[in-house]
Length: 109
Image 1: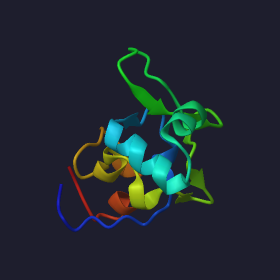
Image 2: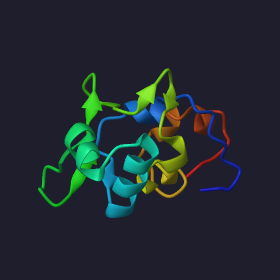
Image 3: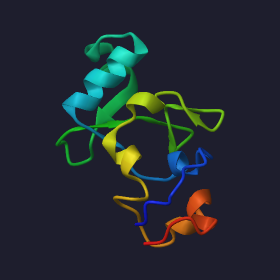
Image 4: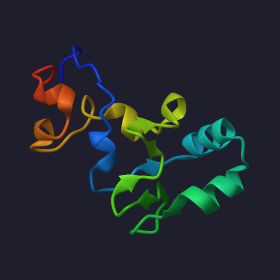
């Protein structure tokens, strides 16, 4: 990935099928940001991964991230590393058709 990628905050990546994995640091940071306990956060916003080896964020409307509102991430300052890393650190074939910044030619894999 090139360093000239600039997120346009279109929210397209937050509507992709898949799961956003959480680690302990993310759980703590997001709970604190939301002003709730970690236990409340886990209960209200997460579910067990399919392989039962950790937690992922719940979705709304099928695949949309639970924290996407009006095309904006409401936890942007503390979003999980998986979200921060897309598409620089990880992506998938055809992501350029979904990621508006990438489709504009700002980055290529």
